[in-house]
Amino acid sequence: MNHPTKEQLRTTLRQRRRTLLPAAQSRAAHNVTQLTVSLPQWEQAKHIALYHAADGEIGTQSIAQLAHNEGKHTYLPVIGTNKSMVFAKWQADEPLQANTFGIPEPMPGAQTYSASKLDIVFLPLLGWDKHGGRLGMGGGYYDRAFADIEGPTLIGLAHQFQQVDKIPTDPWDIPLELIVTDAKIYHRKG
Ligand code: ADP
Ligand code: MG
Image 1 (cartoon, rainbow, N blue to C red):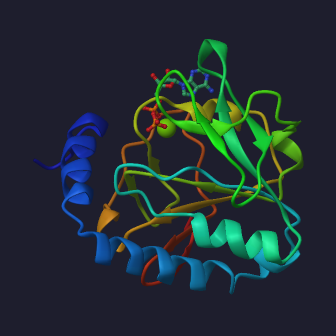
Image 2 (cartoon, helix red, strand yellow; image 1 turned 135 degrees about the vertical axis):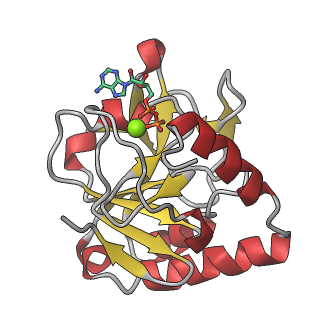
């Protein structure tokens, strides 16, 4: 299989991520956190979007905690109608409530924040490449949310083993500027 499709890659990468044992999972989250907070972008950032990790994604709890300790504002995605996504205020330790897909979100009525004003957006992913290619779950939520927005630094959080030579990209795919893995920080090439 020379050029696997997005769907083929999703199947393989999803299976692979699910085989991670809890100890390896938390070690990966720990390493990613350490590297993330060493970034100059982190130091400067005041408004940071995180995600609620599921299904083997890199956990963001300790990033949320550190952001909170450092007085940074944090946000989580909220899914709306027409496959839209906005960001709502949420701090470490605040309660969450499952949306209709079962994904925990800030409580209804939580204050939303303009995506264009975020300093950093951390994105979950199934696969990544050194060119900033990101393979998501297939909903295209981040591609839509950041289609017409410049400003926020988009940082993918990943396991090293989720690296692929080349993620197939479509015209609507928004590239990552940085990928932080459990091993290393990658800056988009090309
Ligand atoms: P993911 O980014 O989650 O891996 P894809 O890149 O395959 O998923 O995108 C999933 C779907 O989202 C695509 O079928 C595409 O039509 C839709 N999509 C993505 N970005 C946009 C956009 N800017 N406008 C309209 N539809 C979009
Ligand atoms: Mg995409």
